[in-house]
Amino acid sequence: MRISGGVLSYVLAISLLMSVGLSMLTLYVYYARMEQIHYLTRIRLQKNLASGIQMTLGEYDHFEYDRPYDFDLYGEEQDSISILRRAWGLLDQYRVTAYKGNQEVSRSYTLAHRPEDKGRSAVFLVDDGRPLSLVGDTRLIGDCYLPVSGVQSAYINRVGYTSDSLIYGTELKSEKKLPEVTLSDAFGRMEQLEGVQLEQDNDTLINSFEADLVEVKAGNAGVNKVYSGHVLITSQSRLIFDTLASTTDIVAYAPVIEFLSGFQGNGQFFATDTIIVHDNVKLTYPTVLATYNRNDLATIQTRGKCEITGWLLMDGSKDGFRRRVIYLEDGTQFRGMIYCNGMLETYGTVEGHVTVKRFLVNAQTGVYENYLFNATIDGTQLDTAFLALSQWFYKKESKVLKYLN
Image (cartoon, rainbow, N blue to C red; front, top):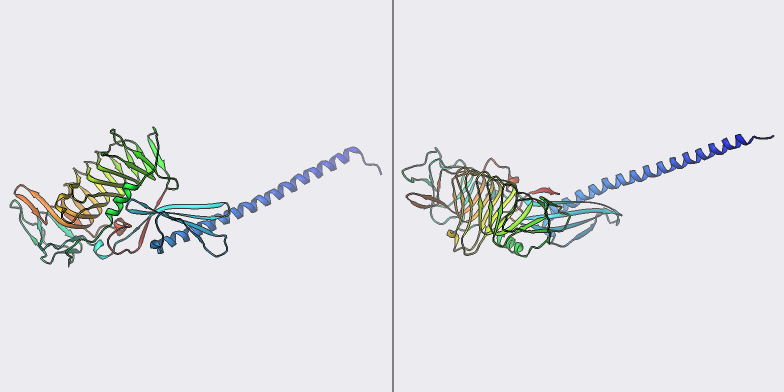
């Protein structure tokens, strides 16, 4: 039987189409399978990443600074994680990486600890043998750790105490010394901290915590750009953050740090002399304002109506505490925790906790120690997550995470 050439061409064409179709189907099945494997691996890596984060929560003291730790989760050499702990100011910064083959996922975050008992009270005032005197429209709300001599009402400029109760909470006995802090260690690390110095003219610098530290040396013009992430800003004299500037999660170190009116941002700011916060400044959580000076003058002061959420920390030698003053002007709204190995002069509102060597009031008729005049300290309205700090002085309890870029 004779078959025409046209039919043979059709057969060949159909065979070719079927081969192409089968090849495409095979490739589709292959890539669908590969995509499924990739998807399942990503899910498994995310679970392994969560396991690594839980390890840092449960065994945070196990990990030394700047030393990478590798773990085989299930003993099969297939599911591995790497953990790196670094100090970031007063917080601990972790980077956890889960990897399998050539796939990996990672996460960076800061880890802090909520304080217990004393750190959740309104006031811890060192027992120096003198009572705490309240004047004017002063409110102490929450448990208060006070000297054995207690608390009393008093007068300044013929103004007496106006509230019905001296303390709206429980009065407890304090101790004759402040709880110890590690602020000196943090300042020591600041002096040694160095990063890659960049010459950049852009208005914005965003550096991931997955990348190496970037250091910005501020000049006389001050700070007027946007900085975010793994960035260190330093100055040999004075750091001035103006209205155009904005910061997120950065660390700054200088003898004097000043925030001009209108500035908004957050970060950890360390000064060896003075920190000044002007009117209409908003420092959001988690902000650290810290000064450490063993013998010389040191001040943290607000001027006008401003908002600060985080921590105010001041420390130095035992003998020079009168040369260290935190001053909160009337109109200041502070939420968080204050530790002052010196004098705290406050006329604003504090929502959170205060640990202090002595309170201070400057009036026309004189200077009064361990007096509060028209001040409010409320230790009941703030969630303890706002009090969390990794190197705090009270017993460590449950942990708080803040994920970073």
